[in-house]
Length: 110
Image 1 (cartoon, helix red, strand yellow):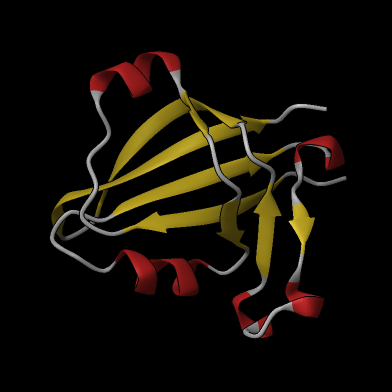
Image 2 (cartoon, rainbow, N blue to C red; image 1 turned 180 degrees about the horizontal axis):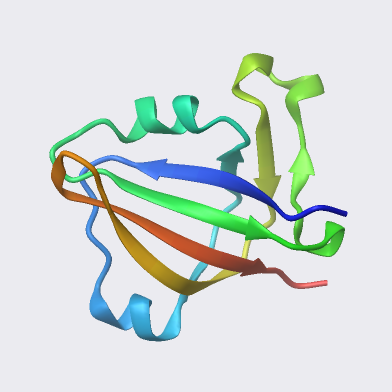
């Protein structure tokens, strides 16, 4: 299994410092995509937030649901409720002063 990255984009969002220190849990299902362009279009705003989700193992990968999606070209991967995101590092988005990319490691209940 080769490391791969998934993406989640949020429009007009800023994360609190506590998330950057301790991480956080998504209480609902979490939609991600294998396609950065799709996610960037969802996040397009003054303060875009992109999560770059590092998947090192098949045990860290959500369910690929493109085969049943109304929008299969979005290459969606769905994570279950209570997925925990542990921040690894933060980067700024080039030419977007308030935009951030946060690389995270997912873990979810088994």
